[in-house]
Amino acid sequence: MSAEETGHARYAYRLRVSSTALAALEAEWGRCRWIWNECVHQSRQAHVFNRSRPDGTEKRTAGPAQLDRMLTQARAAMGWLREGSSVPQQQIIRDFAKSRAKAIKDVKAKLPVNRRAGMPKPKKKREALPSLNYTRRGFRIKDGRLHLAGGIVLTVVWSRGLPADPTSVRVYRDSVGHWYASFVVATETQPLPATGNVIGIDWGVREIATTTSDPYDLPHPQHGKNAAAALAKYQRRMARRKPPKGKPASKGYRDAKRQTAKLHRKVADQRNDTARKWAKTVVRDHDAIAVEDFRPKFLARTTMAKKAADAAIGATKRALIEMGRKHGRAVHLVHPAHTTMDCAHCMARAKHALPLGMRTYTCTACGVSSPRDKNSAHVMLIRAGLVPG
Figure 1 (cartoon, rainbow, N blue to C red):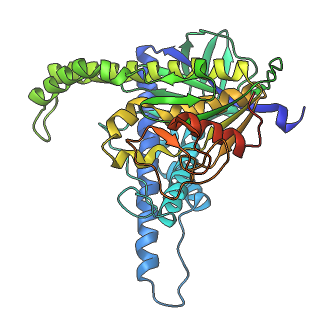
Figure 2 (tube, rainbow, N blue to C red):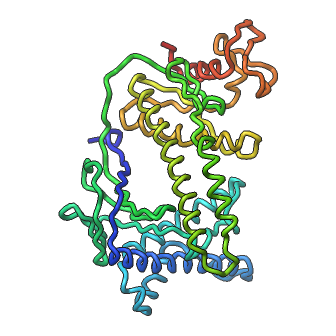
């Protein structure tokens, strides 16, 4: 089986956690959180030392190898740390290294980072949500239950079967308070019958996706707007009952916070459901797809930020790419530069960018007029080298 025919996917399941397992999970998370914060401290110390060191002194590093040695020394000196499994503790160091590497990359790309260049934030006890990662040697599935290293046994709600033996699992708690197990499983491509059709897709705010075929256009479902009134009500309750700094929260505040989190989760699930259903329809009916390689981050700095966030363009694009990979369809990512300025009929380029309020594109070279987004969708097909069906 070639690498092109295989991939990996995540399968998430709800967990039923007993009081004994809950105490063990929280204790394990407390140890992992301490290790993460110690990694942050060591990295900052190395950062300060390297900036102030005289010439000729050896540069101090705090990479995964150095942090692994720190963990070994800490486990030898602290019985409290030895009570937990070494598997999630080692994985938290790997997660820290990935987070730090991403932050450094963002610094070089001049993107906003957390507090200090290349330094992830510490995890606060009352704010950070538990998340434990286990590799294959740290868990097993027996009699339908998930057994984690350290003697933690969890009941899994098997809403569907796993297609293969999982290679790793992440046990985490969401903002509502529910526990989940997310398994990583090797998967095979599930090819669909050839249709002979191709489609071009342009992303937008008024309509999330405008395509070269009208039946596959995705209108804005406005899930966030529909939930705005209820969300504002719970947020006002939280504001009224917010405890003073350093004081414990009241039961009313915790209830309002939980209702807010539940509503946010509901809207996120609705967006994901809409995106996946639309992506499955597009992938099922087309052999090749030309997609605008759109980066929606810049919309956060515009007056369309709220509507753009509700559209979840990034999640929809990701769902389409994943669905295409799963079913062996060709997904072509097209660079978005000048896609609104080129004519899909003669490929002549306008001299000036169209104002956002101008929704009809008229080519000054050939005189053809068409809706702006439809023209862009056809440009995607031409740039991808696909012939419209």
